[in-house]
Length: 469
Ligand code: SAH
Ligand code: SF4
Ligand code: F3S
Image (cartoon, rainbow, N blue to C red; front, side, top):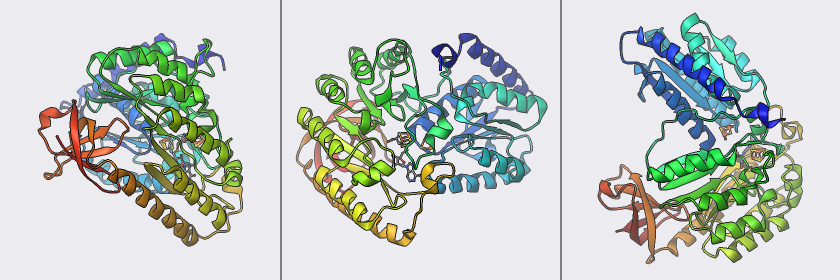
């Protein structure tokens, strides 16, 4: 699709500002301080989207609350990646019927990846009549207009048209802290891994213009932001749709030139497109963290083919070897799916042997969940859930042992740690992250938050490190 149809003209965003003003005027008529609650499920992309939604709500004059009973506007930003995620959301949305009984003026909105699915929208239309507004990720930028329509017409609004997707620049944002920020560099996904719903709900791959990304990062660095995570379903496809010649490694090089004391992380990197040039650029950059989330999904080349991942076990291992050769201190993490349709025990154990070989610092592990409309959901899936659970537990046992061993190797070392928040645990009141992204529990004063500290690592467990300043 033509870029001129992808990047929204500034006039469209201005139009939304006008709806923001009109919605604000309607909400003001309620004669009290309007509070909004935004509840977010799913991945960092959704977290970033929610920060935009909060930005738009703030411009409508809303304050924020975590208590749905106090809220005039409730936004549930949903995830469709696995069935469990969807069930949880339906539970939460069901409960909101009581909120609506107590406060009939409350506006209840369902957005995100679940909302983009027609079957979900139908179910909400019929059985969750207290939900006022349903919109998918493609319509996020239109939120002011949609909310205004609900406020003005007191009618239900559904905006879930299946679209290619656009890029909206200049939306307001509420960031959770001054220390860390998410920056989307692209949207959508074209990979169509056979198990995955994302390409169906997030639209086609589209890259933001480099100039817009660089301006945002420059601004964050100047404001003292310490950790910036670049987001995309597959950041390694960045630039393929741009008119100017630019790829992800090139973008990282440009970002790296921006002065300041900050770290760049990114996710997710698809192994199929992760090449030596990317690893070389990471290795010689000043700001890019030596951290790589490179989801392998399976250690069996047969299963990888059925998943439509576009690489074999050997090709994956070769990439890891090269990345570690140029970055010996690289922290490596991955996602794994156990129990893909037709996977045998032997193949699942190939995944266990792969993680033994790679020795990841941490893993995100999932049991396969069929997603309606995806090719994998049509494949024969004879293995019982109980058997998959046995394989899954073997994988977890192996990874927990590996993470524990790798974390123990940190003890006695001195590391630079970004202190990023309070933990709530009086024993270890602060939390931080190493350059490689490992979690560190710390003792110290809250005034350290937002600073890099030199920390002696004194202890560790499977999930985290413990340290003293
Ligand atoms: N774009 C990213 C993944 C985003 S989804 C990538 O390609 O790496 C995050 C993770 O959820 C995936 O890596 C995968 O491990 C898991 N996942 C996706 N669909 C799933 C499904 N149907 N069942 C179980 N896990 C799934
Ligand atoms: Fe899903 Fe594959 Fe796209 Fe990741 S790359 S979002 S797993 S289709
Ligand atoms: Fe979930 Fe959508 Fe992210 S399905 S994992 S919130 S892209």
